[in-house]
Amino acid sequence: VTRSRRIALDIGGTKIAAALVSGASVLARTESATRADRGPQPVVEDAVNLVAAIAEGATHKPVCVAATGRVDNGRVSAVNPATLPGWESFPLADALAERLGRSVRVVNDAHAAAWGEARFGAGRGCHGFAFVTVSTGVGAGVVADGRLLVGARGLAGHVGFVRNHGVDGLGASTLEGRASGAAIALAASSAFGRVATTRDVFARAHAGDAVADRILDGAAHALATALVDLRWVLDPDRVAIGGSVGLAPGFWERLVTAIGRLEPGDPLLVVRAELGTDAGLIGAADLLGRHRRWLEAPASNPQTPRPGR
Ligand code: ADP
Ligand code: BMX
Image (cartoon, rainbow, N blue to C red; front, side, top):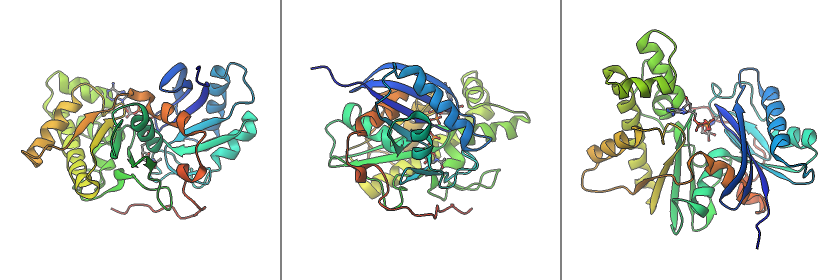
């Protein structure tokens, strides 16, 4: 039996990817940088063009979108406005449906990736499974007994906003303010006195730079603390780590060391995500046919909480 080919979009804080997906296989994929600085419109434009490039002319097919931010009734709100400035209850599903002439569903990106890993990757066979992405931000999804936990307002799994990670030089105390790709780049830019990317920090740490090393160890320690805390709350069978930072060479070893320091002798079952950076696309495609209440918060709620300092 040939599985149907589905169209998926993944709109992250750094990149937008579009793909043609069949089960756990990505048959075609294309991506571009997220032009987030001028609000939602350029992002919608780029998403429309990426879908056109991979859709093989099948104009009737629906699209499932995994998007960074709180998703509620097809609307997207930035929890961290630095990632998506100007996104407050933006009707992404309607905006894309109108431009594409296709039906569109929107899911949170980390929720979609968690679902993809639960179905086809590191979470197979688990009753309780959590997936944490360390990417532009830090997001997560929880799948328990075959159900994706979305939350009353679409905020379930927003582990990036758990607090008490120590005020850093920028005044942030959230996990996302410490351990995300954006936070690593900011900390390095401030320490080096010039603009640095997250990749630069990894390259410098690899070359033996003590400052870069300290920044990455700090990020790994913050993430380890949150993972151990998550274990005390959810007691999952397994927690998978993904995202371009989470999967970057060298980060995993730091994370495992940090967890071992916190709770020696009580192994937390942390594993690497198996679907790499395609988890969100694969999960979104699989969620497409499922019931709406699995995908989004149940009712439109205009209030997006903002974590204080
Ligand atoms: P998104 O947040 O758009 O979903 P990613 O999962 O690719 O996308 O995460 C983007 C973050 O990962 C950015 O901060 C980027 O600088 C960083 N990044 C991407 N590739 C690497 C790499 N090879 N090493 C370290 N950091 C990386
Ligand atoms: C942030 C938040 C989450 C998202 C997570 C990972 C925004 C815009 N996003 O915590 O909704 O799931 O980042 O997203 O507030 P990414 O941008 O790193 O892919």
